[in-house]
Image 1: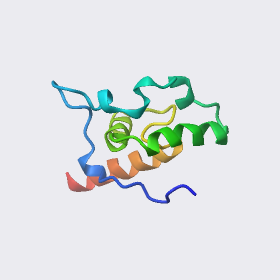
Image 2: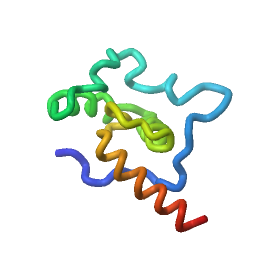
Image 3: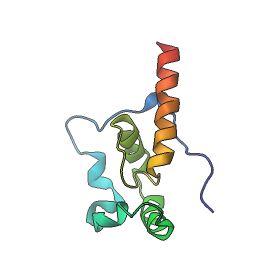
Image 4: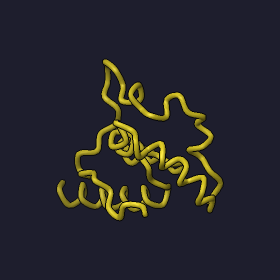
Length: 100
């Protein structure tokens, strides 16, 4: 079963760091066929296939942070679907508004 909470601190979301090696260079998907990360809507098996790659990825948190902070609306990023990221982004933006 898929984990129910996503271990990430939303206010700390940051895009990829400037200069030096990128988190993308360490991503488990860097040698995968990227089409698997963009399954058809409702393709539960396709989403799970992408999540299996993300589950073993050492930079899944960075990937998810990038996807949320840059509003990636398609595909599986950091093991999350577009709907999951939309909810994370809404919560993150709310927390930023309340903090600032």
